[in-house]
Image (cartoon, rainbow, N blue to C red; front, side, top):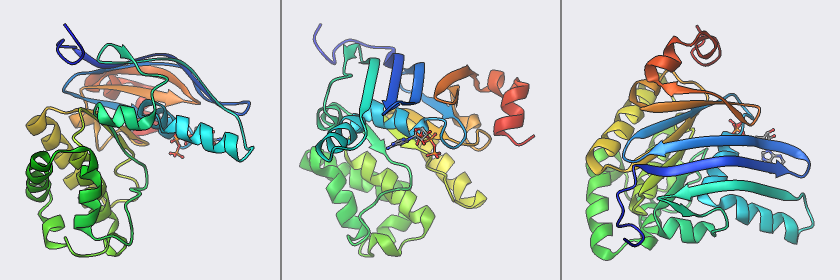
Length: 258
Ligand code: ATP
């Protein structure tokens, strides 16, 4: 069987992952698995290493590494293994990973502020065929009707919640097989949080896409997470299914505010 034909139960398997910014360790021996077709969570306080993990899975860390090298900045080092559907991808460029369906929806949205909603979505579809783009645009508008109404508005004029919908919509346009959501709830109101969490669950159920989602606080997303990991100081210190994590007193105090 060739690439993509095997029915991998594990979409992503990370082993012994270490990332250093110069001599500072950002990820320390992280091991993590994402089962195919479900939602996996990563929880951790500020600076725990969530964004670095997302950059390393999506390959953006290699772009950061190159840029730093060119300007004579800090040395970024990456060690370990990332198996994606059974293939080692640790050395792959971000663009190659994106073409194979590893799509990052970055922290703080990072939408194109001066482009319209529709333009933002079209930029996401650069990797899609015309018919995929058409179908996905319809899907995104059905999922987030606000975006359809706002399609000619500049991204920068949207509210935080609308910008997050747009960032997720744009990521969907890129035809993900695994969608990496880095702190999608950051800075949003409880009502908007609730709406987005529902949308993330719907995306997973309706499209079957594998999702890895990071958040500082577990409470809003634990109900939709199949399995979760807690990162502390760059290391994965705890893992379990939703009930196991919810019953853990350390998780309760640190990530539920109980
Ligand atoms: P936050 O919620 O604040 O974004 P995080 O869990 O996403 O936190 P990271 O941004 O991955 O954490 O940061 C992990 C560690 O690496 C932190 O100590 C951070 O200061 C450091 N770090 C992140 N990016 C860089 C960089 N470009 N250069 C140096 N250190 C960095």
